[in-house]
Length: 105
Image (cartoon, rainbow, N blue to C red; front, side, top):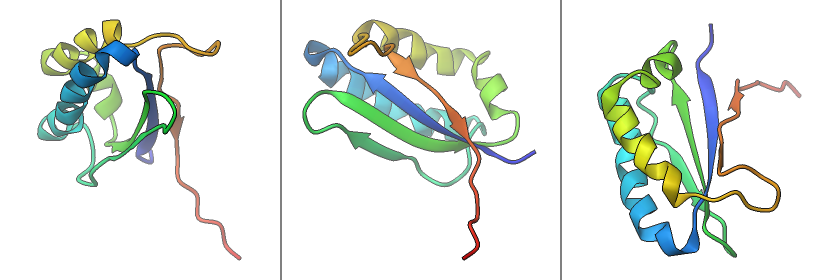
């Protein structure tokens, strides 16, 4: 099975951005220290006109399932939830998983 690339979208409440960023700074590092993600650091983006963040990283095989049960990860995810809001008909956060493709010319 190939590694899964996840595009995490977080719709942050404008009054909670500082607290959210503090948690986000620890997110990938925690996942990495626990062996749930690859060594490739995440790509993180902030939307220009509102506090919506996208974090892109790659799970190792089985990392996604193990992360959802680990107390150190839950200790980051649980306090993130109240810092987020649904916006524009979209949920607070989304986590679609992708696999990479090589497109030959």
